Length: 103
Image (cartoon, rainbow, N blue to C red; front, side, top):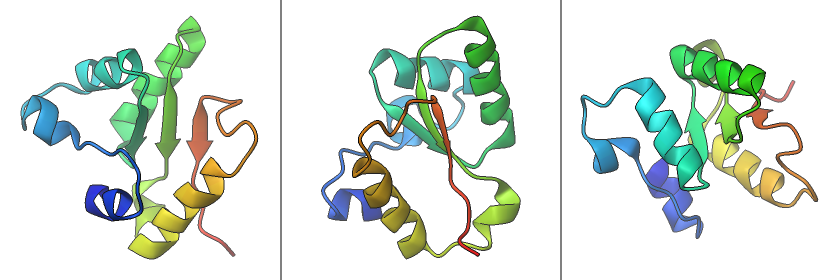
């Protein structure tokens, strides 16, 4: 995914490249938020971290889709969704953007 975003001109960084394999979800999430990055994941526990931050009124941005939906997307469809999101006037009016497969 990160390589596809980079090829399309996005400034993408994989968390494994920043924090290694053993980093804990809350720390990864906080690191992305502090840097003003959009956290992109289909990891359910990270979605729960986002919901905790939302309830606490903490600022962050996330693109999320479920693992079940993951099988319904091609890499190209996910990358196209990023381009569509970027074209919106206020893409993160709500901090979590839920990526859904097109019907």
